[in-house]
Image 1 (cartoon, rainbow, N blue to C red):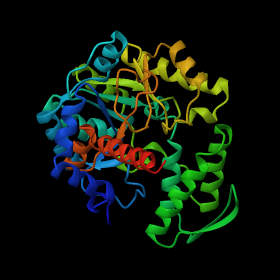
Image 2 (cartoon, helix red, strand yellow):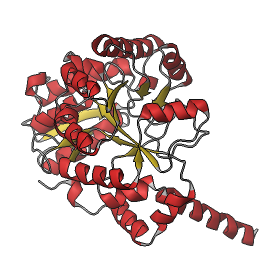
Image 3 (tube, rainbow, N blue to C red):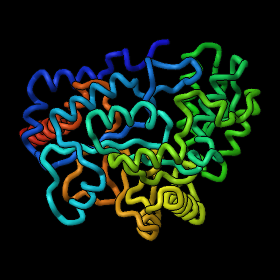
Length: 360
């Protein structure tokens, strides 16, 4: 099948231009004490699996290895713990520092990512959804992916926020389009309604909720034994990512508390020490609230990551650390962690301001 990793996306083309023109090298020298945090999810072998519709969460291991080799040779890869300690103390981190993180807790983090991390001696934090590792909770977006991918039906009639809609499912690209559409819609739902909607959708499509053993290999959770093995190696830390992966701002206060404290308690029980850091599911500015932050502090977390793009400066709030999505090439990695994308944004804003000033 065609994978997004084989396509020259606009971002990848821009990255190549920024590196080739020298903008990335210049940006690396501008603000050497700003830190870039990178976020992956899973790692896969090859370029895809017919059983999975959404491959944006799973990076081929060979690309991951090339990016890690580049970072190990050209940047200071530090742990998230070290970054948090520097920010708390008001100290500057190592120049040109980068932090590696993973979300959800996939088994591929152990089987495919960890060998690469060890090869290059790179620290990383894995934010785990504890119910997923316990084997008692499925990630709701995986259930949606598999329901659309495994159904024998060629269309789906579904009531969306704006009214009923018919989604064609006859071809793989139509199923992928339906998945993207429904993911956006389902993320708007209150958490109390979300799993019920997933149940109804599976019923409408004539499929059942998958058992953990029935999940395609890239979707399977790591085990707690695997987590303990990685932690004992000294490079990997485990952070919190809730217990069932809801969007926390869609939860009532009691559910938010349960998600955060259960996650903390399960990690502590399995690994022997409480987690230091947390990561918001979905990670946008509307996906957590001030009450979420208060609960995290009460639970003993010292920092939390979002999925808002940006570099970490000394003034960034500890519970709103920005991160970049996983780069799909060495060029994109360089353009991202050097701050080249931000440099271009600054130049554009300066040009607009001068233009407006000229005509004012």
